[in-house]
Length: 422
Image 1 (tube, rainbow, N blue to C red):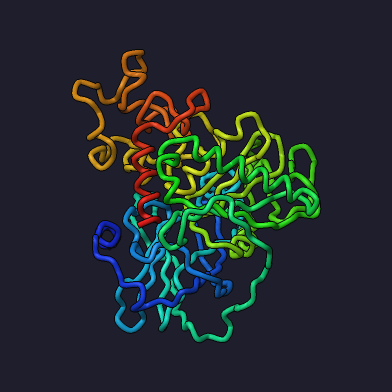
Image 2 (image 1 turned 120 degrees about the horizontal axis):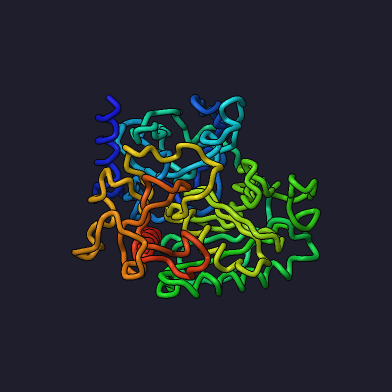
């Protein structure tokens, strides 16, 4: 049954058939909030609320996911015909937490949320999760009536937005929203300046600089009561809007927030496909999760590199290409091909970047000088040193001694830019 389900989902994400937007959806956005609760081995997804938001800024021509990335998969079905009318892959902090030591002995809940175009008629929302063999299992199902009077209509956290960089209609652009974290009302001018600086950083890197005409960037004037962010390991606590903190999963430099409902409430003030949280600190750190959000410190000497590295996680599901982080345990089973496009266990290398490896390049590829500027299969990636392989000896997804994406990552990023802007 699991294998049949995986094949079924594979057909969904690889089909070229797309849904006509106007047949099923209005111009607005529907948000479904939920909680993920459990421990290392169990998970329950429970419904929290529905929120009607403003203009749908996602692509209207690409309603069906083309990639199949993420640890979770959202499907929206027309309730009457049971036909698939919208889908998206995504990941979550909860799934990462399940691979930590704490999850072995602790029951926790994390907030989660998915977006979809606002339906004209009743729909069925389903959420699937990958098991350890990468098969999808259904974890959640709910019928939604768009006329339900319990759907929240108010703007929960109203703030002004502004255009940082604008190239056209949000429905045909990759829309990025910059959200301030730990900026006081008196520091909003600094946030505006930081947004301009970060836009410049993005367009310094390929393939973003070649695609400026396909990207919009928005900012939201959302102040915090205090500057900075929490640093639990140093007993530093700040009253900030998004409740961000270092020491996520007890990893000192992992800068994240578990207050996802507030993140969504603030982001709703602008059109967006991707959320980027800019944290008003010079302390090195950041983090990102595919189709959840990305964030980084704003005033560190390597902020530009942290920014684009984390954004690549959030936008395209690119994995970390380094192999020396003990935070996560058994994240990539050696006999299963990872879904991330820039990692392989060689179980199904044909599905990855094998076509980019020059004839005569050994697989696996030794870390010798003659291969250091070539695409190959270098051991170490996905936080482990053995059994998981990356495309190049070095890249910005591996370490900041490199200042560019490798060709495999550039190709994937280009596909996502096209996906949102077609």
